[in-house]
Figure 1 (cartoon, rainbow, N blue to C red):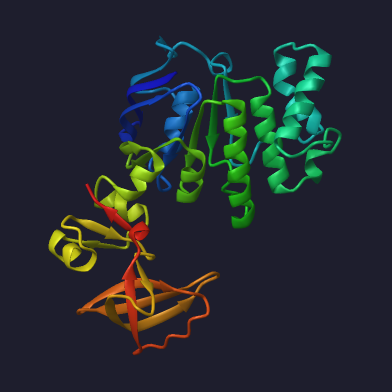
Figure 2 (figure 1 turned 60 degrees about the horizontal axis):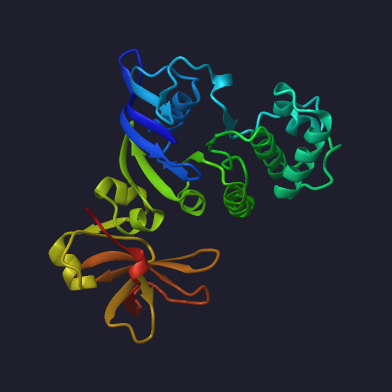
Amino acid sequence: MLEMTGLGVRYGDVTAVSDVDLTIGDGEVVALLGPSGCGKSTLLRAVAGLERPSAGAVSWDGADLAGTPVHRRGFGLVFQDGQLFPHRDVAGNVAFGLRMLRVEREERAKRVTRLLELVGLAGYERRRVTELSGGEQQRVALARALAPEPRLLLLDEPLSALDRALREQLALDLARLLRETGTTALVVTHDHDEAFTLADRVAVMRTGRIRQVGPPSQVWREPVDVEVARFLGCGKVLPPEAAHALVGVRARVGLRATALRVTGDGPLAGVVVERVHRRDHVRLLVELDGERYEAVGPVGGRWEPGERVRLAVDPDGVAIIG
């Protein structure tokens, strides 16, 4: 079990990470989710031993890791660019950590074969890594990190260099891989979908602090404050009275773009102000009782500005704040 207690990292007068308390249980996957520059990668590097904490402690099963160098922590690392060895083939990259551990040749070959099957690269042993696509290279990096059977896997924006479609597929594959191998992991990402696909728990980070920790569904539906709600896609925040009138909830509410949907028999009536076509839906700006809201409709919709539409509330687009 990994435990961070009061962890802080400073660079001179600049505080990058402050007073972080976070525990990751054996076999659990936790995602550190936050915008660029919030300190999440610095926190991961402190766990890895690449940054020296200015306060607090990182421990494993109760043992303080302050005096343990990076290569003796038993942690695996995967970065955004994979950092593969270009002069080694795929098998040579995956087997690198096993060589350092002096694992026998036959066992190395078996483990390399098994891991390449797990990451969907069976038969790629002799391929040059420079001939692989970006997604294939990142799969090799994952296999290499998992080969020594690390007690903790640390992934720093592992999919962000890939295009959207490939990122979504590899996130699903990575989630399956982590579950099948029972790997304990800490994943740093700025992507909501990636975090919620991979993690058992999500830790939302802003300005160097952990603002909220919980299961993905809870964090998504019940953000702890307005800042977290806005980061999680709530473009409009309603006070309790306005929320009660619109969605029937007497609480501060955040509305995502999907909170209002166009439907022929919806109980709400609005007027279209703007229309934008997306890949799989139409995004509308509608005026409702003197206020403007985002709404969505099916991709075949042809609503024009000034046209009246009927709307219904989609609970999946509504978040209860605090």
